[in-house]
Length: 179
Image 1 (cartoon, rainbow, N blue to C red):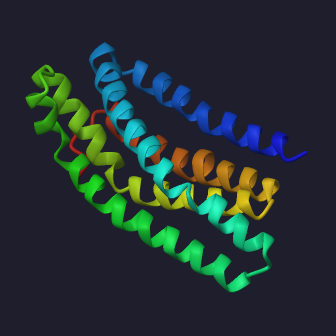
Image 2 (tube, rainbow, N blue to C red; image 1 turned 30 degrees about the vertical axis):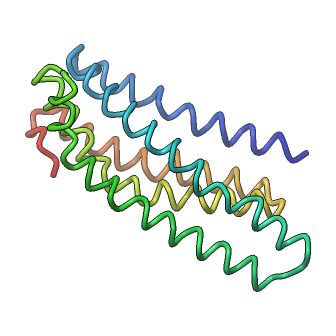
């Protein structure tokens, strides 16, 4: 019974990339290439650092199993603190990612558009990593329905509304410089 809500949460989280691709596709091949590059960088960093903060899950599960509620809370707070310490430098790196892309041999136009994308989502890295901690924490407490609700709200509804608003502004002739 634990697997179904967690599986649905993963599917919902993975489906968000499809929406991004469709929206960028309407803006042209250069935009989709740049957006894909930016999304790949964001996704790689998020996956890498989620692996680090997911240590909250077994630690919280062990404390929960031994009925040490104080330790469960401490682990959750420390996990959120570590996610903040890890996420801030990465968000700052995203804000200057275009220069790094040029050093890695990317086309100047692609790097510039990817820079716009990375700047737009840079601050999103901080709550995304905190969200990974909360997801791991809720999984450890055997709360799969809460994980599913958290994923749907945190991955689909709230960020999608923000991204759609930004997309409408960019697609309808506003400057692409978001930050």
